[in-house]
Image 1: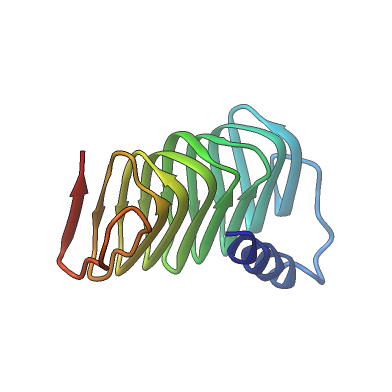
Image 2: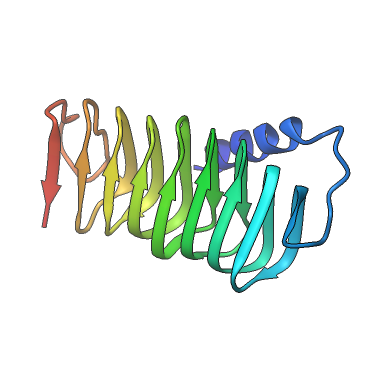
Length: 154
């Protein structure tokens, strides 16, 4: 799990390495300590201590706190859990904790799934309750890997 989060963080940093971050809700690479409404970054958006609202990044979004709201990006979303919300991107979504919402992307990862993952590859380490809809849905809670279009555990 930590390797996945580390790869996601390095990816986000590499995408915005040559861009000076602005500590405003709108910018090229927006970084804010706390987001309570809307954050927009042309390249990326980063919330450090709180994300309650809407976060948009052209390529990537990242929250060092659990998400309560929406993360939308062109490539990737990373958060330290999803309390209530939606992660939507084209390449991958990572929730480094409990996920009580919806993840939609080609690849979705979470520690503990209590929501919905929709994508080509959906990965959860623990799945006490939740639904995975995709082609490949591996998780450690099952005896075998599931390769149907849905993996529903209640």
